[in-house]
Length: 313
Ligand SMILES: Cc1cc2nc3c(=O)[nH]c(=O)nc-3n(C[C@H](O)[C@H](O)[C@H](O)COP(=O)(O)OP(=O)(O)OC[C@H]3O[C@@H](n4cnc5c(N)ncnc54)[C@H](O)[C@@H]3O)c2cc1C
Image 1 (spheres, protein in one colour):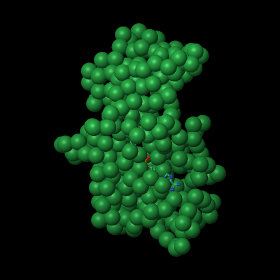
Image 2: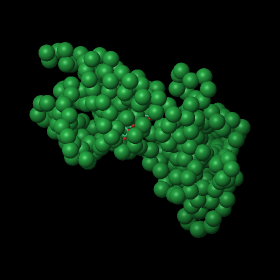
Image 3: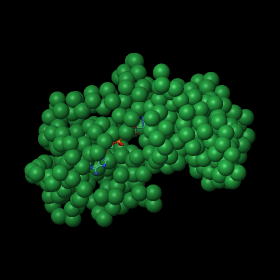
């Protein structure tokens, strides 16, 4: 149990958090960063990353995040492996308490707690995450050129992901547990008009099928919820598009959230409704959700925190 005092406290160790740390440290703010339950963030769940600049060859998600952690430590970020469980943003300095009983007092806070993809919850799905199961078509669609994939979901995101994947895949199944989609009418029309897309209605996935060497997806066991009939689909990849859960529960008494739980930030920056508290990365971005956009907003948050501190001195 310890007390940490800093000018800037960064909550989260994904691309947004580490980048905020690097910028804040290089501005001489001696930041403290609390890494949270998933050290390195969402990218630690994936294999090859080809869209983060600076790596001519694919870099693995865990390696990229380890590099960011080392870079942050090398420029002076104090990283504490712990999880924030309670915050007081009413009094100054702000106080955040943690799972391990630590107390963090800070003049500014950067929230970069991300937004977790919702998964189906199958053991077989977990086994193949990063090896044929993905939650991000923009990130992984490129790997499925000429292949067959499935998207699960019925909302606009699922529809968008299915349409996007037709840029690469030869065939895209859209699997939905009901007999109609929640996606808006324009999206539904585009889906139905696309010859590469086949919608499988009233169906859920019972199991993701695959091979061990090399680890990869080969198909799905799909069950029709009306007839209970089980069939097998042969394919190469599965994209889960059933929503995201922004990690904002701990902040909700102080910070304004939108109807989906994302932090609302100023349109041109990272400021929240509480002066001195900033938010960066997926936790405030339901639209782009990329490592590079998260890193970019992490840099913005640190620069805004620095300007705020100057304005207060
Ligand atoms: C399977 C998969 C593959 C992907 N592939 C790519 C890709 O190829 N390219 C790409 O650009 N993007 C990819 N993405 C998206 C990318 O991972 C995210 O956009 C990015 O990680 C968001 O960064 P972030 O820092 O905002 O949040 P995250 O990476 O989600 O990090 C959030 C951090 O907050 C911490 N945290 C949460 N709650 C607390 C708390 N209470 N206290 C302290 N800390 C807390 C967590 O431990 C974590 O460290 C992929 C995502 C997934 C799921």
